[in-house]
Image (tube, helix red, strand yellow):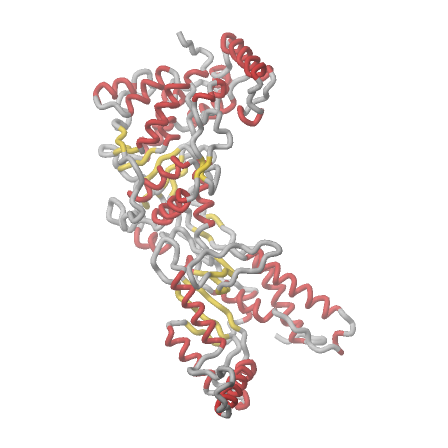
Length: 602
């Protein structure tokens, strides 16, 4: 494409950069959603694929804007026709973008840097030197393919060969034993071959996360011609270089891709929607144990939002007790701060309905927890088993004994009772559901202690189908987090249950320790997720905040690769069957019996 006016080649580059910026706004991998069942009230449509940002895209886009700005300023200069052509990085940027929009989907990173030794590379901080590493221009196919663009011309290679030849000539003419060691090559080598070896070394040390697969390396030599028409640009060492790269196992691509890609980019892969089902062995974390015994889950539902507010509006006896409690704390100088109890520290809040409990009971009115479990487990309801960690059991009982009502405590103890017949009667007594509505009891205990670091998730799920690599990546992320130090919760003097009455007794229930990696993740939550991942079981949780935090850590640790490869290939193989869910999220149900307006402790 030739443009009118001065420097037509620069005007052509300007147009290409403009086309690139226009196509970047809509570029991004359409990823299959991770194997998570989201039964929460505010969950988005399960079948809508999400578009996720490509790592490095912002930096790459900023570089394109800078080069375009420089080009436009140069071409806007009325004297530019008399000036020599501007040196620009545009050809390289254009080639990288062509590779990005032509690469096998999904593209997960642009301009990533990897270590040849396998050590983690961290983002450069202001004022500090950049860490050495191997640059990869495009990470595609979910991390399985690396592409590097090299815009070296024949003329540049010929100059490099002349320099190499000069060392060889100097070496042959030196016989003085006192001379410095020769720079002459002992074997054929050049900058392009060294780039290829570095890419292969980095790929070997940085397998696709969650697998042992080594990324395939593609080297695009966009300007290098092994058979140039001009004999002056020919050197047999250029085709030899290409042959040696291919002998190493590198996919070598010569020449530029078509310019039309810049304004007609290929569509991103549209993934088929996937359905997920829980495993017949379900791993329960602490939050769901609390939800399973909560008054919100079992009590008859309010008839209206007004009824819900009235149910959790404190009675006169409680209001008076609470005011005295606040005054006592003030006099003792240990009154909790506003953000620690979730309500104002003045007296006006005491008689208000509990917003958290009202919201939760309204969610229960929309879809009951036990109803959802019954529907999801319908295929395996006769043989479903529920498991939890000993730590989750003990912490659940500790919390319920302290701030739960008598019915909630009876249900909590029934979850782990040895006499099944008696436990069934105790658990369902007073529930709006009939006895045995779901086969929940008994909740079995996982082994005490830590998992073996070498234990990995099974290759296949219970039905014999390939298990999503999400399980392996989740297990690895959990282990990485647990290896870091834990720290007391920033609100450790206060109860983990969000209610005013619980806050008053906060000195007797210590908050769980949180991880140093992310304060939104408690150590016992990460342990529960690890057990579920390693066993290949679905982990049922009412802690959506922790799951979001865990997914964030999984994304941060993937180094340009997807956590989940069970995308269109597995969907195609699976037909209409559902995939195994690694996580099942529901809305929280707090302990609420003691917060009811009609509750009496007598």
